[in-house]
Amino acid sequence: MRVVAVSDIHARPSGADAPLLDAIHDVVEEMSPDVFVIAGDLSERIDHLRENLARLRIRGVQGLYVAGNHDVWFEEDTGLGSLEKYSRAIGQACSAAGFIHLPDQSVIDDSIAFVGSMGWYDYSFRREDMEIPLEQYETKQCGNAVWLDYYNIDWTFTDREITGLFNEKLRYDLSMLPRSVEQVVYVSHHLPFRELTVYMDRLPWDFFSAYMGASSTGEILLADGRVVLTISGHSHIRRTINIDGITAVSVPLGYGRPPPNGVMDLAKNAVAEIVIGGDGVCLPWFVQGDICEGLPYKFT
Image 1 (cartoon, helix red, strand yellow):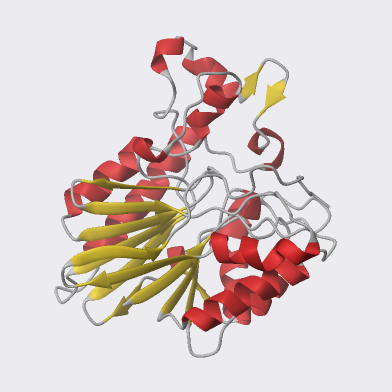
Image 2: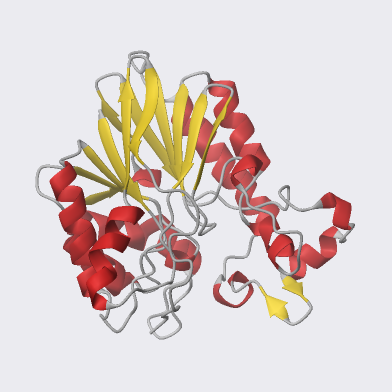
């Protein structure tokens, strides 16, 4: 099975990223995969999410989406809260655009199953040697720098509570797979393994690394025995590791934008090609690192 994957496109609300979306569409279409995975952080507003997914939809290719943290930022003007977006609105937007919101519905193709979750963070990726109190991670503030979920997520759960809830849902989804499933692909936005996290030995970067994912999620995947591949994003630095037989890949694009003549090259670098076979997983095309390094950041 051939899978192509990308995450963290962060399409600008102005519509200025239409050429980039079209380029990603064309790159994926040319690769002719069986499955097209987008691992979150496409749009912060539900109407833009629906429109951008529709733009990326490829006829004849199974499209799978998992929400990222930016996708569930609340919308004050529409009244959509984070929990309602994740549990209802994003699934509806995906369906309207021809994608499946994987946390709502696992997908099985012969003996391969795709299960998904946004994932979350419980501070288990923190640098314990920095001796920063857990209470400070709860504030999401390091000096004058603030992790923006603090301002934009409005569910009433703590980070560790929501991580626990998502983990319970993951255990349930794995337990409900039929016996015919031999290989499982886990798709999430947040990282399931600490080893995918990049530390820089500086603040606030390493403080914010605590918000990259949760070790408890990875433990569930390792214990299952059928998981051969994980696809995630969030960190904006692309990595791949192998941990106890699981190939773990992070496929973020990021905020950087090239001049118009560089859009196609960025799209090619952003899309990873992954092949799942009886002998395991291989990556015919995967660009590591920060593919936006040196590019100006564009937010609007």
